[in-house]
View 1 (cartoon, rainbow, N blue to C red):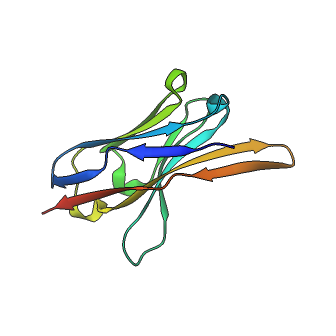
View 2 (cartoon, helix red, strand yellow; view 1 turned 180 degrees about the horizontal axis):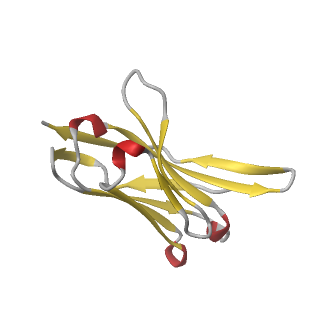
Length: 119
């Protein structure tokens, strides 16, 4: 079982920056692929960025060049550095941990943190 706790959300003006953190419990953090999703009101939850257990990263096109995902396995924490924020980035941001093993796996979610970008 993994528990994920996000922090770092808040209200920021357009063009500003925020850094989200997601702290994970347990000793197997380095085995998990970690992702950040976001969900705006009335919309589905979408993948924003991901980082594999080997450190490979991927981003949705709308945040490329502005957001950076990183992880610190010693601290059991994944980060999302968000620069150049836009009003359309306003959403609840969720941390997600995925463990892939032959024949199955595990999938965990945090409770979310609100990011609001004012114009």
